[in-house]
Length: 195
Image (tube, rainbow, N blue to C red; front, side, top):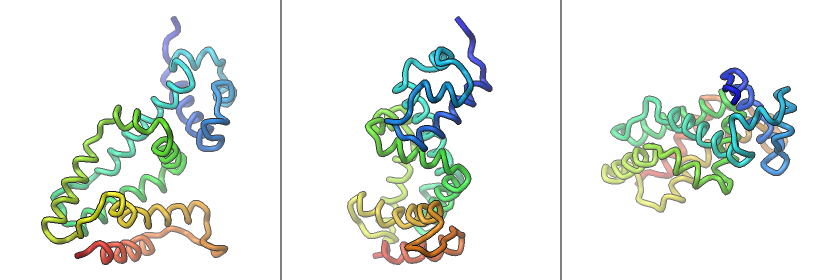
């Protein structure tokens, strides 16, 4: 049995993410990945059982990484304003410094693989955010609302700004993400969520 080469494995991961973002699940194949890595298809099977195994393992690894970055310097004990600001900074930082990986995470979290990935990741992020939200409601910093409404209002505007940045325009006008625009938008979101 051949041994794993860590450098080759890193290359496979990077190229797989790149191809999945570019071609989607349907356009992605082990053959294309092998060619992009300049290795044989047989080499891929040292690391992964098949295409689905590769996608699931990459999804688990990247979503775990993303969630760890989202909780950096964040605590459910923060005030709602301070905590949401830190969440926005962490989420924006992840998306701006890892655009391919961030897009891959979105693809995975909006795919049939989502439940598997989230079960495997078993992140404390959900518990941390629920604690944070319940504390903010109790402290009258946040209106009680269904989670889907909260998520749409609290994070939707940030993800739209990041999408506009990626597209470099909003309705035909040039757009570049900045902290100034992010904080201006965050202030409006905080007003909308206050009791």
